[in-house]
Length: 412
Image 1 (cartoon, rainbow, N blue to C red):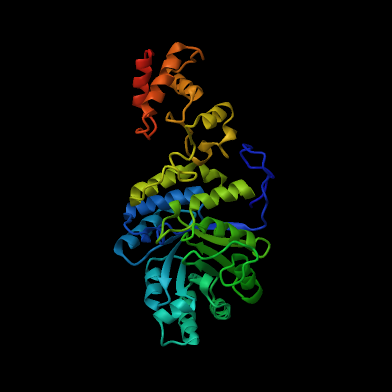
Image 2 (spheres, rainbow, N blue to C red):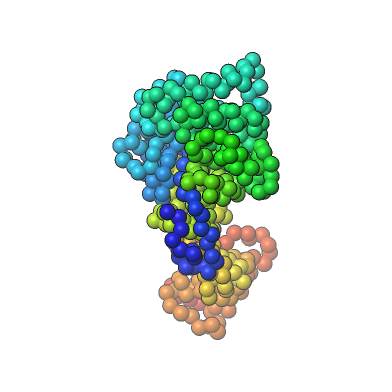
């Protein structure tokens, strides 16, 4: 399942992995929560290709919107692909939403409902707790009676009073819900093991296991404080030994409302690197491709220094770093870039020394250059002169570097 080796599979690093006795199901919500990010949209055709790529990297459940015509077209196109991943749609606790899911012939749905009193009082000030629980129970029962697998999303779980949330979870479990999603809606959860309810991740998962009847759990972490991946990994570790599996709700590039969600690619690589999850190994090399396609399809720009999938995630410029990487790439890379579909980049800029400039020139020429070649010394001077005034900030483009090589006396 998730532990076949005590070391990282690539043997790139001698650090030990920490096996876990739990399966982790990636429940990617790029095509639901992700595209709720302001200024983003995706065509049905692009959504279908994103789902195809998600399936290739090992995502086992894909959550989508269902209300607009393009969303429904996307679902139909995805269904025609015959993916291994399960397709699920997001619903409110109302019958008409569930009827839409039934008309689309999906097998699973998520029914979302707030559980914090901040939300309950703001949205239903005249309803009692029992009335609010009953409306969700009725929705779950209706969905189950029609053959759907039901996840219940506890919106703002990390600010909920446990006495109410416990009653809510037990009620939906009795109604037939299979999974309860802990929603850290505004990113206030903490991974600190001793942190209490409502926002202590360990405390929350232990309380759900100890005091409720729900069969399975899920974590949906937002990144408002920058802790979405940390809290997602904390939930996995907290559930280890308590549950056979845990669902984790993530998005490619961390897309989503406000500061977004836990990144799918980061969670997968953390599971692979730290915990030896072999089941994701076959899809790692498609992570960069997936990220690039999602970026092109949605208009979301990938920061060049974005971990794992950014253009500069494996780029080196400074003399100390490039010197180390050229001798042994493990000095400044935790995995080979090609493992995640990325590329090592040696760039020339303000911090570049003679060794990397020579290496880059050899790369351009396709042959070795003597260390004391006067043309190399001249090339180093030309590069440094570009940055002497402090006005130039960016690295040299390939053509710029080639022009300097010619000026230094090389024939290209």
